[in-house]
Length: 194
Image (cartoon, rainbow, N blue to C red; front, side, top):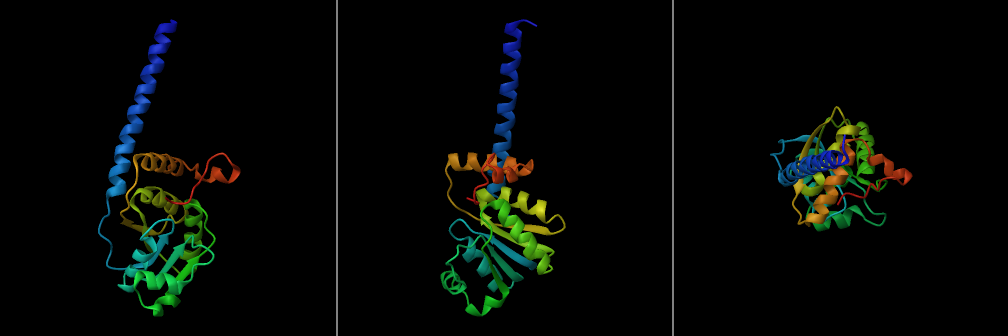
């Protein structure tokens, strides 16, 4: 094979990979913008912290009777339920039905924390609340840790730059290929969900 032919083949392969990435990115943008109807009721609700409106949405869904229990995953050490309830405009009487998970530091950590909580609370169906751009990755991680639990996305729409969307797409790809856990060893960063 001549050098010129090898260069042409390499360029063609790069162009094909670029088109494949672009097609996947377009799918990702549509998936991030989609929020199918929620079930009338699920066993549980999980909110993955890290952005505006997530906790409030989850608590309002719980107050509406959409589930019997809720987990707020990745809560900062100083956050108290009363302050979260006040911000969401819900009754503090819901406190016994809400778990504040403080262990998660990443989306993968959210999934592990949620899996332990779901087992402890006999959760077989789960409404997942996070930002739309974060939803595909969150669902990928949760499906890995909760293979027998039905997941229902409740996306909180948030503005996101193209750069953030491209970065989130890369993180979703890593989650889909099971590479998100490499961040614990310094190879890949598994940043907290968006």
